[in-house]
Image (cartoon, rainbow, N blue to C red; front, side):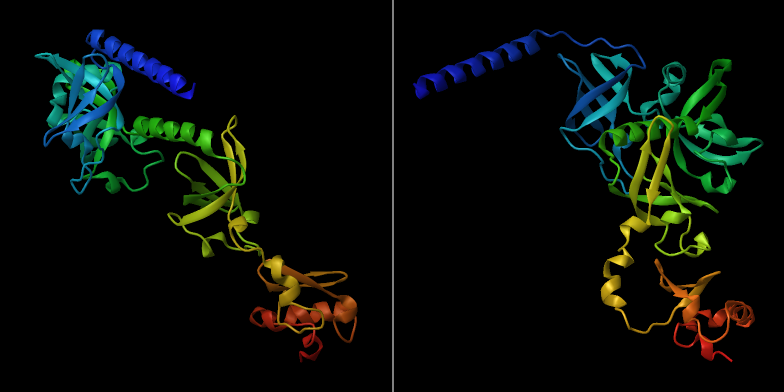
Length: 354
C-alpha cells in the first residue's frame, strides 16, 4: 500500500516537473521597453559581464564594473536576484544596467534615463555657483544644486568633491546639453526601500543598532538604517543628564531599544538606558540597611535632601536626619559649600561641615 502510494506520488511530481519544463521551453522571448525595470537572477559571472535570466528564453548582460566595490571585489554571486533597467537589444542580446556610467555608454541613453528615472553615476568635480559640477556617464557635464545633494542641508561643501555618487536626472534640456541632477532623490528612494523592509521586521521592545545623527537639548536622534528616531533625554541614562554632549556625539554607534513605532505619523522613539543594566536590580545587595556610603546632594526639598549614590539611584535624607539645627540653617549652609564638595556630603558627616 505504502509502496503504491509512493510510486503514485513520484509519478505526479514527475508529470508536474515535465509540464513546467514544457511550458518553459514553449515560452517566447521577453519583450521590454527601454528604461523598463526588471527583477532577474544572476546565472553567470565572467571577467567583463554579469549575465541574468529575465524569464522565457531571454537573457541579458550587465557590465561587471557595476558590481565592484571600492576594493575591486565582486559584490554579487550566481543565484542572486538583482534589479536592473533595460537599455537596448543588439544582435538578440539585451543590455541592462543598474545605473548608467561610462562603461555602459550611458551618454547614448541619457534621455531614456530622464524619462524612465534610471540612476546615473557621476563624479563630483567641483563646486560652482549654487551647487556642484558633476561629470556623469563618463564625459557628460551636469549640474547638481546644493538642495539636491545629500539628505540633509550641505554644511561643508568640500565633503562631496571627488566622490562618485548616484544621481537621477530631474531636468533634460537642449538635447542633453543642459542637465540638472539630484542625489537626494536617490537617497530618499533608498531610505524608503529600507523603511519598507524595516516595517516588516521591527517590533517595539527590540534592540537595534544605529548611529547618532544629531543632538538637541531634548534628546538625540538615531538613524537605524531607513528610520530615524528620537532618544529623549530621560531615556539616555538611568541617572540625571545635565549635558547630553558629555555622554554622546554625532556619528557615535549605539544600541537602542525601540519604545514606540508610529508608522502613520513617521515618529519613532528609542531608549538607550534600557540597553544598560538597571542599577535598581542590585540595590538591596549593594546598599543594605545600616551601611554607610558617600553621595552627591542632587536637590533640596522642604522635607529634606535627595542624595545620588550612583546614576539612577537617589535616596532621601529626611530633614530630621540632617543633623543639628533647623532646615533653613541647613539650606544656608549648603549655599556656602563649594559645588566640588557636594559628592562628599553624606548622612553621617553633613553636620560636621565647618
